[in-house]
Length: 327
Image (cartoon, rainbow, N blue to C red; front, side, top):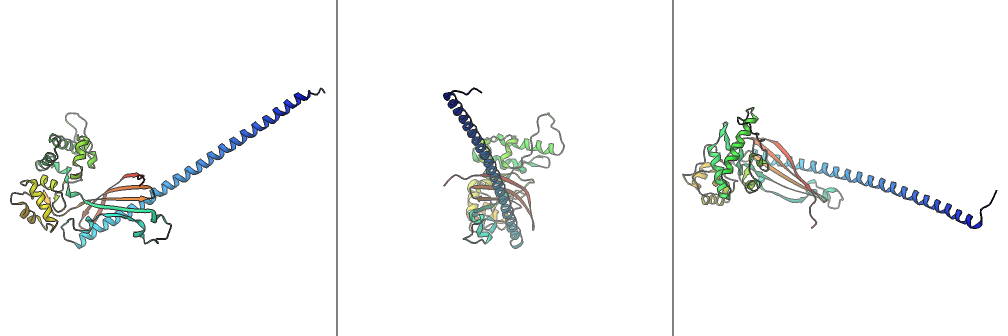
């Protein structure tokens, strides 16, 4: 058998070693790629599991906070009079506090309760004008329309938007009861919250302006004169001026209204607070709870209805779940 010259053998040996080295490098690269993919999948699974665990923990804690708020409102109905005002325990907001404070956890423990902070408040929704008051008995309500017209005038908004909103609300309610639009135009959906009033034709700028003064409730409701701001009182009660409403707000801080007669004394005999326009008690409340767990912030808003000693949750909504900016 013929042997290759020396220099050819050296070249062949170098080629074989080079090929072996290339194969080894490719093998190492493949193993490293597979290992990295495996580590990434494992890391991703851990992250998903941690996020799901935080979501579940937030839901449990906020459910407990909601039950606590229901208990406060129930105890208020049991121990207090039928009057609701801003000096009662339910009206005191819960400032952000470490969750361990409520659980009785040790300060030296490493539990997640040490890194979790809970806050929230209860808002009387009858301190606002109710969009449902625009319609009564299957037709537009003159009193409800006047209240919204005064509010829009006070805020500098086009009053024609009130007429549009009221008409669209009436059409939406009739469609919900099985009636068909006579003109064949699309029927709007019934809004469940103020942010959805665009369904009734309100532009975003107007919705933003009226949000602090307006609510959407399932039934017509009077305005609670013990909790409403001056702008809402002025809009809801015929026969008064804004200065009268502001005077009532200032004087009720010293002593809350016990009945509508007290309101008439403060507002004057021209004030028309009867016929379901105003009251000094409330049935509908909004509970907002916020949980900050590590870097995750979860906010929930719930609509509660209280009838005597029964406090039930009508709607529970996750508002946001975001990461707070670094301090």
